[in-house]
Image 1 (tube, rainbow, N blue to C red):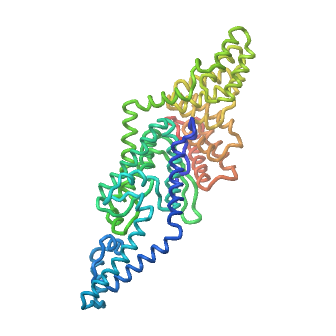
Image 2 (image 1 turned 90 degrees about the vertical axis):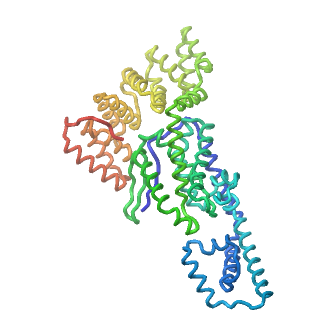
Image 3 (image 1 turned 135 degrees about the horizontal axis):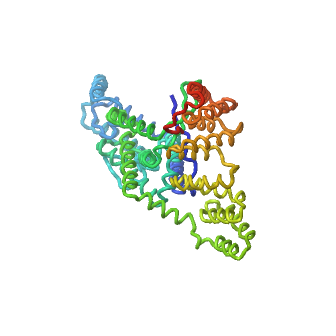
Length: 501
């Protein structure tokens, strides 16, 4: 079975997440450099280990380095090791001469030293975290090393889905500090449960687990989209809330950590489940503390100060207001139209543009700028402002064109405030706005949101989804189920308690 997260309902950030991209770049570069450093030497290293083992196997009475012994017998219990040594010793001929014995011992020591030097020169041992031999350097570098492309791909996929959004709300400086501290928490948790391990731990998954924990706290209502596949024929996608899926993942990691820690050690490697557990717990605790003490609001305000210029810092806005004051409304509107087109995230310019448009009865010209303001307020969680501005916009521009995703989100906000009539009207508007061009995924989100508010809208959206040629089998099944439920409810039977997403 394959189950991969492929997206979620948070679909925008205010600026490029350079820290997240830099971490991803360092991880990719580290894998490339590790591959280059070991290119052409893997076979040689295996031959050296095999030669040393074969010599030891034919001379089992000789003394052997403990590090080499642990490599030779990785994955075997102590009893199995004893049985193997007894079997090897049964056919071995021990020299009577002390000189011959010393020469054989010297030869074995030479072979083992050469084999181990090759092992210890490997990037995993240089830069990986070894609990039995902790290096302050490796505590940092192990977070950027990976054991292969698939290991790297899995970690970077999760980081890409969660990292930019935590970086966006906390700011770059806080995020990089949090990421590194999550990695340290993961590392020390792993060390605490594997203090004598000589196996290097590599990977960013502990730090990324911390980001997942923060995502759970900050975006617990977010719907995560998953791709699943059973065998070759049963596959599709489904959405599930973060508050359900992330704790389930954590429970799985905790179970595996408690069940397989010793097994992993005996087998000479595996997944560092305790690192995942430690990183996730730290991420939840850190994000919870940030929220409890109001630091997230301070981060948001500081970031907002950097991203959004004030009216004083907007010379175009000042100029437009001056022109409007002296009666040159056309030039004022032109300046603000250009400013909002070039800088669509300039909140003050958009509001000034809308204010002048309302003053001069030219609201349709600034309607799209006002929609951008509303989207920004939704992202910031400013529900009252969102609903006030949407009511003002639709009151002045009844036919304003808004995309179905935005309208679904507005309906959800109305539902959260128990304004069910407005929620139903907004969902009907979303159905009309999307029409036949609406994707199956959006149509199904609309159908689910409308099911308990307006079964007729739910039925219409589900039928639109079914009509799409690119609809997935799982989506087809969901559409059929929504149609069945809507038919059972019938017109006028909705009892709104919540709006699904």
